[in-house]
Picture 1 (cartoon, rainbow over the protein chains, first blue to last red):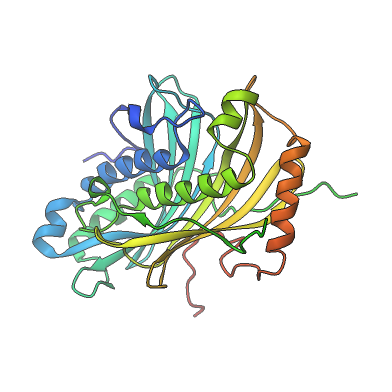
Picture 2: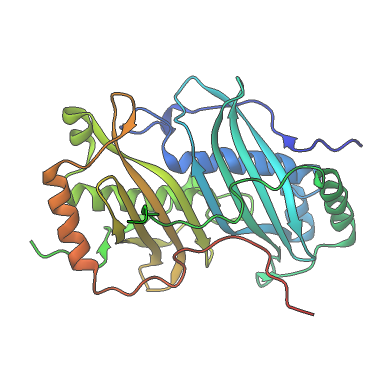
Length: 161
Length: 161
């Protein structure tokens, strides 16, 4: 299997209920788009609803940092990219972009995720079969540059006097 | 008017459509809860749907950092807090917590927001009436400690060898 770098989602539509009184995609629903992109990428690594149902293992989100770059509106169609930038035996650090199908950037997201044994729930190592797939994705994504917005922290930066 | 420190939302319910295949509140919908808490706090400062409709001014989200602390399930009821930790003439830095009505912490969020003139849209200074309300909230919130998770950045921190 050739692994895309980054992994790209199918085209996703903006739903009517997601538009707020500003007439644009509400900030919270960018995360629904990112999550749908994540679901597709994880499924490629064998982590999906049947993995959770049959093995009682899953991936939970621990931390997310989103940057909003450009407004999206009702009739826009987007794709979500997925880049694995780091992992160890229990954790994943990933970076995503929402881009309009015309190519322009709408938002970025950086995520820290934990592999979880749902009996507990408690953090647990990836099983060998998933770890092998993760390592293949990591190798395929090793050629991608570190994203400009990775490791970012929030603050109001003032010009020095 | 006495300004609560922090400002607390009304009790909010978890909606059925927000539960994912892990059987808990999907990560994206924590942001819907944070956004509803923000809407209530902004309305207290005169920034709501009628402000946007009549004056063509609004507040857009630029950046958000969420930490997921504990799972939420369908029948949980939560409240969302809102703390103004910094502002200037065009920007707000805020911190929120989602807590179960029993008191335990489910998630935190730090946000950078921009005041926007919707003709453009372009970043624009707050008008004097809103600025006065912001300053009153900032003064009321000055006694609150800086949140432990403010200014955080994502990464896999490894134990040194």
